[in-house]
Length: 538
Image (cartoon, rainbow, N blue to C red; front, top):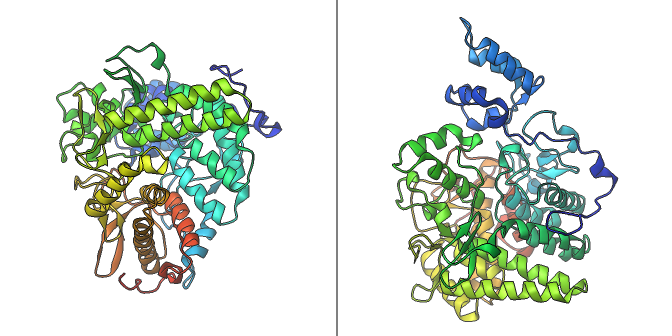
């Protein structure tokens, strides 16, 4: 039995061959060597060292370092390269043959982005998985939780049911072995998750008749238990991990990371950000980690000051998108429990979903502004910022028709721009703000507005996004992680901002774009050909 009393799913003989993983993170494993390497800038990117593969026993490497580092002439860079193998990001990314269509390019990328279990090196930070999986691309060489749902949309349309099935097995396996889905399959990601989209994945599996959704009920319940840990014991005004009990007795959730140290994959960046704040470094680092758990890393959404990341306060926010996804999780558990002949469980989770929706209406809805908001529970007030997350309650069916109509009107007036739906109204320099647009936010908005009959707005967002992606693809023969939604004279451009350069690939852009191409067979983006002039203006 699992810790929450639900039986684990039998995933078959294949799981038995998964190597035992080292769950100690690189900072815990290499201690002072880790700090020396990161602060010494042995690698340009903080993520490079934590992804390195040790050439021998990690314990022996640390022992050798302790014996040698104080000796005259010791060279840290030479030591690291002698004892670790760097997994370098390819300098030349996959590009289409001239004249290849956008759809053909996406379908041709799946093998490039697929990783196999045999590719998991021993003793590194990569957590082994039993089956093949798809990575985003670029510096992101591992499985990511919420990315994968949007990637799966394209796998389904591209006829890759084989990869959908193996991805399903992998996520079920992660929940069975760790009690939650980590941010990614790296040991340094185990202390946090990402937006809980496994329930959306299960719906996708069911939609494509991949498997019976009922088999995932134990996994959904176990993931839910992880997110709600400690909630039952809280009194009004108390918090524990992801849970906050508000003054009216309702419980809503926040993003959280169990550690309060600099993120190992962004060690130098987090140390620098914390140094710019007058708050304790641990508080700042916890909020940076929580923002990474949100997937929105980073955005003025989490900050007091638009131009100061050090003012970040993620753990003070009750985000509307997180609570919408947990509403979906509760609703899905209720539905499947009913099908499984568990009426008591079904009634319990249906009540939980109703309670959450009522709490969202009280704390996360602003009728005066006409959109959903995040709630700052520490200060007892709504966040003033409008973001694309306001459409998530529509996607999961948590809005009333009147709320949906108001959100549609607000989005049309304040977030709809030339290239799609804007991420926010802020221009902070962070990548999850203007002028950047992101595939997952387009999909959630399109699905939400379609669900509530706002089909013209949904089609408009989809059309603008496809034009953005098709325009850059036609000119540069690639898809990227994020896009500038205000086009220049020569067409669309890749997004900017953030801690790392723009990444090519790119899993969720591929997935959402492939699905939207399927839904709009006459869009001009079907005619986008690699290496050609940009698409004509809309």
